[in-house]
Image 1 (tube, rainbow over the protein chains, first blue to last red):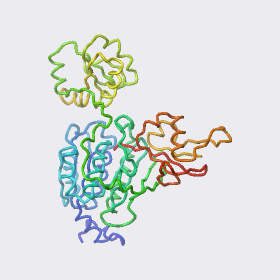
Image 2: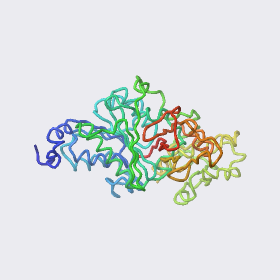
Image 3: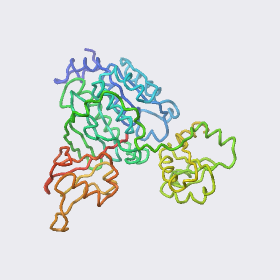
Image 4: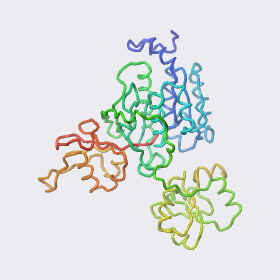
Length: 355
Length: 84
């Protein structure tokens, strides 16, 4: 056995057999963010033979507080490219599969099929439910990790016919029910802890050591350092999934009219008197905003009235496009005569087009 | 009856735990099942009613709406969380 892994192979319960199992395994990590990176750094270091990387985002300044593989020199570069470069340097023996895409209902089954195990390091419900359903269809286990403020959740779903994500949460939350890290914030070290827990579960599933967190949800509270485990059982109905849903993105049906950032940019260049509401907080607005924008924060939408009464069309923007969508749902009710358009991708996208 | 709160329920209630007083204190009916507990909490904190999936654990195990609860049970509200 090569000396690289001697500290693991000398472990009585792991041994060269455990190492060989890791070397023979293929693991897909969906999401190269706060959870995915620490998990990958350890899985790669420990000698998992094939690692799939999937993401389409670029490295942004506000990522660096928790995504510690990236540096200031990487800003603006694709996460996939940077992660691949650094992980290859960390372990030249690993085979990497790069997936320059987000997971969708159209590509999920084809992509997941070649892997032994999926690590869910995403930051949104639609993708988590999509991973669950695809893993149930393909009969693959997936290691789940998720965050809320100072708290982290970990479990292993669909392992040896064990419970699935839907056995715990049957229904996908509607878009604005539960905030994500972008809206709610997260302390940098928490995803480091939870992502590392996920890597540990991956190793246990692949090598058969210890007790896998199947049928158990680990709840970690960073503020008290308290961990609680909740047991849950399989609901056989959730194992009967035979095909993916037609739609994972929106469950509350009210899709608001929208405009792509590229088109909106052209509109700004070609037209005068565009009414644009920016529904971010005053702090975000003051830090950076488009010239035409009027700040009417989401929780003070009544401020919009004086600016939009009498207009026919109003464009609404926020940081990523989520809050603006929420704002439009409220504005449409208050101002039925006005047509509202959501600027897709929000300021994130606009800044990429016109920095 | 003490309830441990996780995820968004902690933010809705504004504290990591919640105490449901016994009937001798409030004169109100104390919830006897998970369903009654959800209704009871939803009346006090209407934001909780908006959660489409809210797992409730009784004594460290996932409980169904019809499961009974007692004042000495350890209860936890565990909504889905999405951050990553």
